[in-house]
Length: 239
Image (cartoon, rainbow, N blue to C red; front, side, top):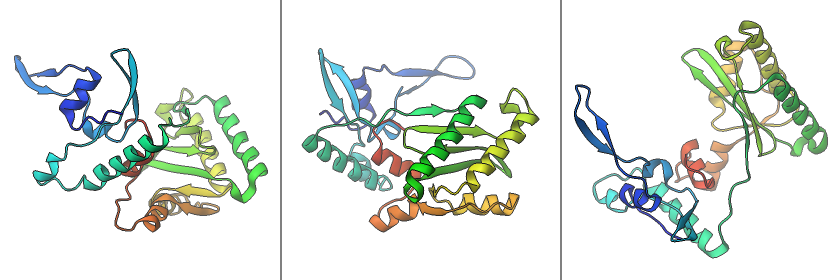
């Protein structure tokens, strides 16, 4: 296992040459790193070096804390816990995800069927996770995941669908059906999502039982609990 600490070491291991920005008026500008440690730290990457595949897990350089940047200390500490665990037990990759970002209506239909099938099979042991994204007062999309391997991102704005307003109305109907489905629901800091849906649409999320933010707080109240931070700890991909 190789642990590159900081941007310089990370780009050297990945063999990514520096890029130079152009100034607005022409001429060379500042040099920038093609990949950054803030996006790649904590990720688990198989890299071929000298004909041999090694595991590369980047993290921050500890010198950053000497410069007064203590805000990333918990993430840095979590990286080393992950590294120690991986070295002892062996590295494993996350399960391959099927990300339906611009789904067809057939894919949407199959996802609803999967939710129903999961609910019939597992009942209250099942879980449908959802998260909404907003632009001002508009809810522009919602994402669902039901089995840990398939996620459905459902656009809610007319310009995102070939059928325009008609497709968007149907997307909202699918959204409502899934929110009111009896399968247990999960969120991350879902107070915003649940409040917004009830305030703007009069929807009450059925069986909202689990919230990752609060569960993580119970594990360690002194730790950070943001979604990006926790994803960087628990997943192996760059975020």
